Image (cartoon, rainbow, N blue to C red):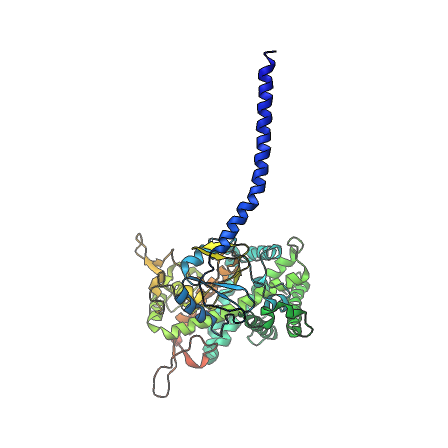
Length: 514
């Protein structure tokens, strides 16, 4: 009998412990929603980032120079501000380096989505354009394909294409210096159409397919501007017959164009001498592996071609404007080119380690006049809090490149075009080298950063080196000999920039012998 007492006590003890665990687990399950709800309520009680006041029927609107408006808001309300847009969406404006790194990169998993732009993303692009895709399965599949063909290893294989096209660009400018923007367009189109579609025939800026792509891209760019279309403010308008008919027509034109280009690769990819191996042939060979429909494949390749051709030519135009506006900085680069390269040949990618001033010129150009001045909007996938301010899920968030590159804590005297901000002296070698702690943000942020950044960087390097090696670039003068000031934010300034060859012998011995 005495032996049964301890056994009974142990049984009772175990039963109590087991019941306590069950009760405690139930208690936690019941309490968790209350705790989470309390935390959420407390978060929602926090103020939104500060910004201009808006009223139910008077929301904030942007003019044509949105990035400058955002900079004024940043100056008045701080590095993270917000405005209520006409569609009742909250737009959070990130205008300085520290919050850009903290939010758009450090918390990229929260800020990795895209706003659903009805006209640009859904109607004109059919929900297929990489830039506009929401964060999800399709975006991940697209990004996987892009990374496989645009990473550093793949980019190295494209260097010979870029070098040849860059030399041709210089020849085009020598022949028609007043029309240098056409030469820039030809360079960009030649490189990206070779990479994307493997075309072997020479490309001219006036080729029908190039003109069509540039036309569709220009339409798309206009459609992405905040408040550009009524359907973005009132999405229900898409259900009214005729309201978005033009947008759907544009989408069909785009789809037909992109599909015809992919079909051309599909029909010729196995015929020797017709096409080089390219992004599209790689994608088509693995179409099932990547689970791509024909329309997805067409838009994936088309988006790459469109983005690569437009942004590169625009960035090179800014390089020329920067050179014309800052001759003293150009002289530093040309002295380096004279020392490293000389007059007997043109710069190559092999010269990259010895040309830090060229790289600094590229970085400062991107900072001084970013091609996408406002940047492209992100969206939050869940609630967040930053510096005591509540940023709700679904907020539109923009890292304003213009403002961020004018952050005086990182870029002192931001209006000054200063190459030395990117350079330092290596203690061991005593050579001038690029500062590893400095970067620009022209390629975007976090998971949404440009997938082709390495190829783009190399295009900018080789073309900047060749342009400054080949030409003295200066402002035109008026009838009295006074320099005509450049409007560097204009779309085309061909008539206000003069490109003179440094030395005719340079072209004879260096350029034409290649």
